[in-house]
Every structure is written in C-alpha cells, then in structure tokens.
Image (cartoon, rainbow, N blue to C red):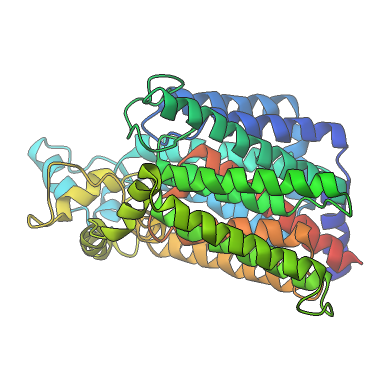
Length: 447
C-alpha cells in the first residue's frame, strides 16, 4: 500500500503536462491583483473565484487527478477543509439545532415569530458560510493545477512570486507619491503606508516577505551579474516591507534572514569563518547597520520607528472577548465567516469603541469560534502534516525546500496577530507554497 501511495503521489507530481501550469501562474497573478481585499470586496473576489471556476470547468481532469493521485494525507485534509463549510450549510431539525450551544438568542427570536419549529443550519449565517466556501475554490484550484514540480518549475514559481512582489512595490510607490489618489482600487487607507494590491498593509507586508523568501529560493550559480541582480531585488523587497509600516511584517524579516543563513551554511559547511563570502556577508551587515543609523534622521524612517515606540493595541481586548465567544459556541462553532455577527454578542462594554472589531486579529481564535472543535482538529492536522513535510527535508536542506517552508512559517506567525488567510491573494500563495513543499517531499521520498 505504501508503494502504491508513493507511485500515485509521483504521478500527481509529474503526470500533468507542463503547459497546464499556465493556469497555475495565471490564477496566482489574478489572485494577487484582485484578491487582496478580503470579504468586503465581493466583486474583486468574484474575479478570482470565477477565474478558478473557469479553469476547473475547462480542465476538470486536473481536479480529478488531484483527488486520485495526490498524497493521501493532503487529499484528506483538502477534502475535509472543503467539506466543513458545506456541512455547516445543511439544515437541521429543530430538536437537533436547538441542542447546539450558543443558539439561545436565535431560538428566542424564532419563538417570537412562531418559527420555533423551523429547520435551521449549523451556521448562524448561511450566506457568510457559503461565501467562505466559495473562497476556498481558488486555493484548491492552485493545488490542482500545480502540475509538474521539477526543479525548473520550482524556480519559475519563485520568480513569478518575486515578480508579483516587485510589481506590488511599484504600484505602492505610485500610491505613496500620489497620496493614495492613484492606483488605489480599495479606497481609503493611510497615505503613508505602502499597500500595493492589498487593502491591508499587514497583508501587503507579509506578501513582500513571502516574495523575499521566494527570491532567496532562486539559484544564481556562480554568475556575478545574477547575484548582483538578486541582491538588488532583495534590497528592494526589504525596503518595501518597511514602507508598509506593518510591525508584524517587519518583525517577520527575521525568517528570510534565517533562511539565507541556512542556505549559506548548508552550501559551504566547512568554509573558514573569515574566508571570501563570509567576509562579504559581514560587510553587507555592517553596511546595513550604517544605513540604518543614517535613516534615523529620515522622516519616513522615523515614522516607521515611531510605530514600534507605541505598542498599545486593542488586540488583547479583542482576544479576551473572543475567548468568551468561543466558550459560548464550543464545541460546534458559530459557522465559518460569522465572526463579525456573533462577536458583538460577547463584546464587553469596557472594550467597545467606535470601531467594530470585524476580525479576531488572531486566525486561530477566529477559527475556533467559527468552526469549534472540528476546525481546531483540522488546523492541527495541517500542522502535523506540515511538520512531517518539513522533517522529510531535514536531511537534504535545499533552497527549493527552505523557501516554501519559510513562506508558510511567515503566514503562520502573522496569523497570531492578524488574519492573512482571509484574503484570496495570501490563500492562493499559501496553496502554491504547500504544493511546492509536498512535491519536493514526495520526490525525496521516492528517491
């Protein structure tokens, strides 16, 4: 059975023709350009989702091949992820629905209009949950159309994401120069923050961190011009992260820094400390330190540093009330996509202000509130599978492996403070990185 599973996984990795990967790259670009706004921007999200549906409609064999030949743990996790919101949309009889925790308010409201015997869904807001399910179609299509994951395609994906990151910086530069009057298709926002194609500067910064991880995954060989180009693009992407003024994204720059260090140490484990490239690396660090010192006098740099001086934040209060809401709906959950509606029931008066929380600002707490025990177990399953994939690369560390691991780690860490997976762009990028990580792991195991 193990041999059969391995052969099936290998077939999924290499069986699709490389021309099909054009759908992969096209959808990833469409998601980045139109899918960075979250649930409030339905028309923009619809462009991404309709593109995914068109791909699946014209190439249904790609989805079929995924469920036939992808590694078994991945197939199970993807199927359960797609199935959970659909189960929450199934109408339940009154006796069963009233037994769900946290439904007292709805039950009392239905009793007032003589509808207490009405069948109701598991989710408290079917429309929101349906939108959440539709939002899963694009990342699933990314996984299904990943295609032939040869080393050459790994490099192509890294170059594509790097290019999308640089395009975001160019768009963001025009936004900054015009005071958010040009190329601002989400409206509003802070005119001093770089957003690019995202509505949230935290997600914009995270995407640039992922692009930097992808850039580091591109091999340059011994070509000096390629190394210089790579260094220039790395500097540009790092500067873009700072211009977003996202504290979490700036802190996440430690991940590509560690990735770069690991790549270098694994490439030259026996090189003396003060030889050649080591001295160059130390020189670069010294130069960056000098530039940082000079930037202290720059107004834009001072504005960025000031954000780290003021660490007062409403997130801990939102987390406190989220835990109360989780206990109300535990273990069934309130329904995927319903946080904004149900959170207000348990929001304490001392924490309330003129702005709606909107999100839990912690992906894991929001998942537990909306999906309960089932969502928690599903997230744990993805974590265990990710650790298993990472362990499979531990004996053969390569830039092609480190880049997706670093990107997924960056998304996971920012999820502690924000909601990066609530927009199509980051979801599709995460799916692309998972596909690369799975493919690399299966090829290693097959060898």
